[in-house]
Image (tube, rainbow, N blue to C red):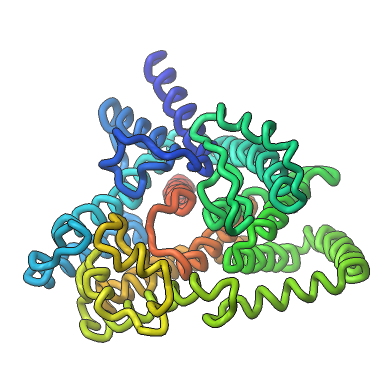
Amino acid sequence: MNIAIKLKNLILVIFLLGVFFIPFNSFKGFAIFGVLGEYNRDSCVLFFLLCSVILFTTGKIKIPYHNIIFQLLILFIFWVILSVVFNSYDMFGYYYKQRTGFERFIRQFVSLLISAIILFITFYNIIEKFDLKTIILKIRTIFLYSLVIVVVYGSIEFLIIKFHMDGLRSTLHLFDYFPFTSVNIDKWTRRISSVTFEPPALATYLLSIAGWMFSYILTGKGFKRFLPGIFVILFAFLSESRAVFFIIIIQVFVFILFLIRKRKFNSLFAKIFLVSVFAGAAVVTFFLKSTVEYVYDELTSFKIDDSVHSTSNKTRFGIQTAMFEVFKESPIVGAGYGLQAFESTKKYPKWATEDNWEFRLKHLNENHPSFPPGFNLYLRILAETGIIGFFILITFFISILIWCYNKTFKNPSGSTVIPLILMISMVGYIFNWLKTDTFRVYGFWLCLAIIMVMIKQNKQLINESK
């Protein structure tokens, strides 16, 4: 019994370390883990996979196979396999960037299984072993600790980049001694990335923890309960990641809607509204010109003919256009999971590739090993698995949102704080997939595992009451 308890606590410690290190990926990665592909530089996956090994070798693994949401996930994975079977003839004829179509599919399929099966089942079994409220509070605390490091690093980096306080460089380089962190100041874009490897990765981390940090406003006391949420919004703004900043604004809207709908939080909403009005008035009064210019620049930054964002926008929109062309050629079953890049490279529009160094040096360069990113999960799934795979995935996401909505806004009894965290998080992830095409989103699978545990516990309570 003592050994079982010690093992359970050991797994929890390793798991929480993984949660803490989710944003820490600015180091070069481990060569020995190159086999993990896109997971290579994610420090957190080392801890999560260690938990998986311990669980799968020492304990009985529980799988929520009766859950309709999980069944939709399995159905999607099954269709992923079928999409490749239907395109097997083309797959074995593909060759691009020193890689065959079969190799590309195996890499992408293994990547999907790591997140959607291995890590998800690991998270589910860890959370299921503990009191839900207790482990949720532990996870939230760990996210707060990691945010503190992100904010400290990011603040120093911001002062160096924006205010040329080069005397702080030696202080910032102290973070080179922090695990999985390599200090790298971006001299070209002059944007902060903190402990992550690029500014969009920082912004994605911030939207991942937004719901967790906003929940402190409901459970904390005094002004300090607002600080975690304020830092999330502030650093999303400072990261200059246009899409993610607007996503976090949507998450704020969901939180505000919750405060309005829940009568006991109406006074809290009134306080936040008044403070926001006065703060907004102060900003407009003292920084009117710079604020208007920034908002205008951000709203017009998605054009392909401006001097600042034209290259990245042309690349993004060009690749998305090509993926849609691939979908139109095979609308039912797609080109096969992981295989759309072999077809997309033939369909990039001229307006995207012309005078674009990203295509010349990376995406159309046979000597550059990385395959072109899709920049949009929904378009990627349409192109690779057709309308059937897309329909299954969207049904999967909608089922999650419906559960979150019902538990958050239509739950007359019981705590709604945990469902609110999950609702805000899931809204963020689903919008975020409009700009990224990978399932390697640790926070999503963590939240999904929590949802599965809550559904299971709710069924148990119903059965016990009967």
